[in-house]
Amino acid sequence: MLLALVLVPLAFAAVTFLLPSNRLRPWLLPVGGAVQLALVIAALLWPDASLHPWLELDPLNRVVLAFLAVLFFLCSVYAPGYLASRASRPNRVFSAALFAFLAMMTLTVLSQHLGLMWVAIEACTLSSAPLLYFHRTPRSLEATWKYLLIGSVGIALALFGSFFLAYAALHGGLEPSLFFQDLVREAPQLSRPWLRAAFVVLFVGYGTKMGLAPMHTWKPDAYGEAPGLVGALLAGGLTSCAFLALLRFFQICVASGEGAFARGIMVTIGLVSMAVAGIFMARQRDYKRMLAYSSVEHMGILVLGVGIDGWALFGALLHLVNNGLTKGVLFLSAGNIDRAYDSKSVDVVGGAIRRMPISGTLFLAGFFAITGSPPFGPFFSEFTILRAAFASGQYWTGGMFLLALFVIFMGMGATVLAVVQGEPSPRASATDAKDSFLTVAPIIVFMSLVLLLGLYLPPPLDTALREAAAFLERTP
Image 1 (tube, rainbow, N blue to C red):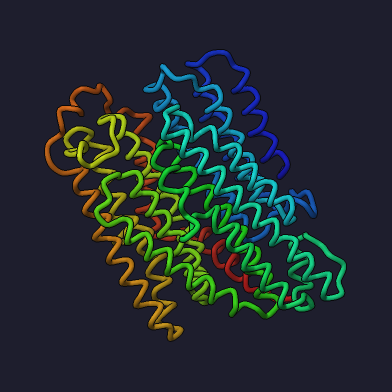
Image 2 (image 1 turned 60 degrees about the horizontal axis):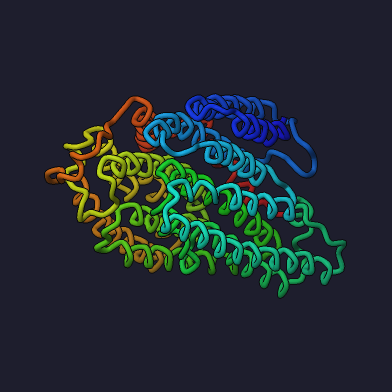
């Protein structure tokens, strides 16, 4: 069953690539997304479906696997409408690469072996690179190369970290193993200096994939030039896979007794990421690059929550879901606005609510959600993290967290309000783009889920998140 979760998207990628019709090909995306969602539901209800010890479901990856299936399905429903508006561009490679990207993200999530997970994350980068180059402009080519080069540096560091982790076992007198179950079980016997060195290098390597500051430099270009559909999958999908990888190594540190060391690094880098995002978001003129810095901020919130510990760990896992769903609202609606104005600059874009009433309204609502305004889901998860910080006596961390949220709200708000308010420019009237069912229905569903998670946390999700948090803090 778990192997099918990887092989089925790859099969759809092959069929999509071979299908000759440029018009019919995009419709395979929602079909494949629906099949994948059904398979994920079946796998979650059939917990013994594993390829032990390489692929296996555990309390941690169950949450991420279900979230990725929902994220991709909603984005796949959006895809035919988007590609129809870009009918002059070939979509063979784009459509096939989307399925390949889904397969590799799924493999990353299910992997129980450090080496297999490393290969899967690198495959995620390679399969998503053609998606960035869809517009085939000089800037999109530059963004693609920057994405590949910086990502390659990050994954190379992650490989060194993997070697360090294996040597920590060898230096501790153990038989080296890269299976996570073995590493957690034998964690107390690992060489502490080599384990610390491994965590630092792995954190930098996979933190580059997440886009944590100061390893975030690929994000503004990649997110700014990618189609909104791709931006949503990168901000909600690829970053979640990299975060899951960091959680695996955090679990090993906790089991070895080095949890305090790992938490200190995560709190520091989390606050740095939020501070960098706030600085670059101020007076940002490109609203898609603004979303990239918003992603840097929320990656910082994720690792900050893990570093604070306690209830903040539950809040960080919930925030992974809330952030991904809200990014779906923002990137897809931003993509609709971009098509209407043929520009990403606030110097050109204005009056989006008048020009694109549904997309403009959803973009504004997404802004309030992603900045932690009630009653949306991110408010609940961010408040959980903040409450845990103050409850554990980490007043300085909680205060800096609040200050960063305020600065980001002000900086992001100035750009968003410039986009949605005012009168549409003459340039907007020159395009024939408009809201359609396929290009707004998935955004409405994303927004509904974000609102639901702010008002009510479904018991199955609550239980899954609690089990995942307990799983991370488990000791041998």
